[in-house]
Length: 186
Length: 186
Image (cartoon, rainbow over all chains, first blue to last red; front, top):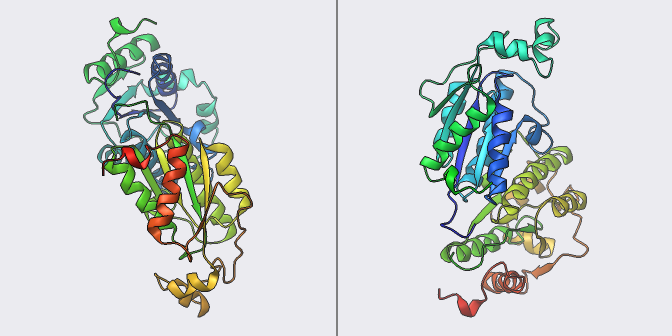
């Protein structure tokens, strides 16, 4: 905390439900907190109460959701906070807006084949979507527009969460946003 | 920027339309920026596009508006940013929520008698409200619940904007959030 002033950034984790976004986001958040760095993690659970309680899963509502998150990430990242956003964020245009609006935007494509995500089905959401109990579920009856040139590509069916977290950390360190592993002491 | 790390706070300006909230908020913001301090000013104009575009002026929508602003102020203020919120924010309960949720909350009651605010009528809103073109306008056909124990009371019909800004600045300096006037150099 007493080195050079911390630079803000926006680490944007996009991918299907079950691809591993939350796990990886939490891993980066924990490491930053352990180092006393300023960090905020925004995901559906954390923003639902204060920001997006009124929104559902239509295209319009998803866009509004990302729009509000983008606004918050913009204000935080330009004030030196590391912001970790993990949202399915299936629409390319909404992610491009986030890239344009925020400081040091880093798109992370958290990728696993649909069948792998479905087999994980941590929250039982795919099962519900297949039974028609959830409509407009990304990958089932709603599209996912994959990133074309993400800064980071994580293949979570072929690497462990620890490997993914290390890959993201190395990128952040390379850009000077966090210290390199060797300087960590944790 | 190279002294002690900046402490976050939430300066909450409440009062009738025309009482002077924006002028005072802009004055504090300008002085902080001139000193290189981290500051964000949130008001109807700045949050409308990204955060509250869907909201009107019913009690419910006003509450949602303040709820979202509170969320943003919470995240910024706990990360060392000085946040200046200027909203009519007529409901006591919503302001109390903001007090509870944010870091170093400071309530500023920007007060002028209704007739003074109406005679200023910078944006022509009172005229419209009186003609019935705007409904639910605070002070006309919607209530304003005055703060009971604001940290700062500004009587803007009896003091100049510069005096009000100086009064707020002195309070912030006393709490250690900004340097005292003598140390300013601007």
